[in-house]
Length: 344
View 1 (cartoon, rainbow, N blue to C red):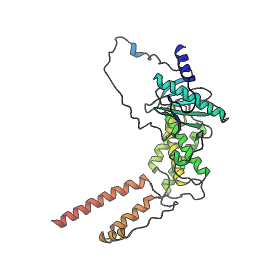
View 2: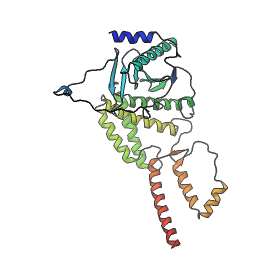
View 3: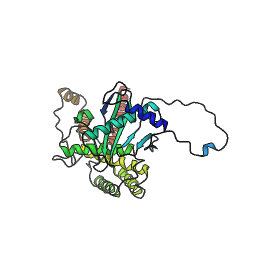
View 4: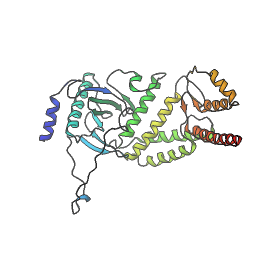
């Protein structure tokens, strides 16, 4: 207990949102973390392998304060979870004493802010923190409302979110962020409710039907991909408590809500077909383009028409983009061959 007391003493010696030692508290989102952009490098080295069966047993656990436990994401990322009135997850390496001290400080500080703002703590509220050299990044999620939230008023641009039409449109974006969080921290949750899995199967069934019956479906996946994802969801329904399945289902839900944000799902003006523009675009073909179109015997205009069909409101669907590129490369190769033959 001496180690624990020393950490708690170090934390209690510091207070306030800004200190010379701990820096500042900053909002972030589950899509703005450094998860896939870490700058640290591993340092493998040679070690001695001791004789006997010592490696057949579990290694001795490293020290963590009470309530904290380590988990490993299916991709391999180590993260830590605190089971307490304020549940906390972090990818910061808490086996490092300095990092742990900072994490305990910021946990205590954020708890005090929640208390001052009279935000009740419950088992469905979860805090993410990431310890940095000059402070701490954070966000909170609500596992019942399926949203991400913060302790201060923020503009969508500060959070890297696109412009929205309404509060319900913003809610879709916040739900996308929530599922990104669940995808990154799935192992401690104990599974997903059966209704979440059943709803996902229903959405994927509609997506498959839409792709099979419409050339301009707004779903991001092709019909074959929808079938494969349906199989994944059906397998996960019987194993929804497993963290690997939680991660897989959360990733699918995340993509669905990204799709709903882009199509303005449930808004006054919604995108009902992938070639339907719903965002005003003042750009028009220039004189230079019109001249180029003449010099290319209207080839430029033909490509422009195809691009306009698959590139709507700065949104491109892979299922249409890949065939376009394949055909374009084939056309360029044929044209180059014809030009070479003419030169000969």
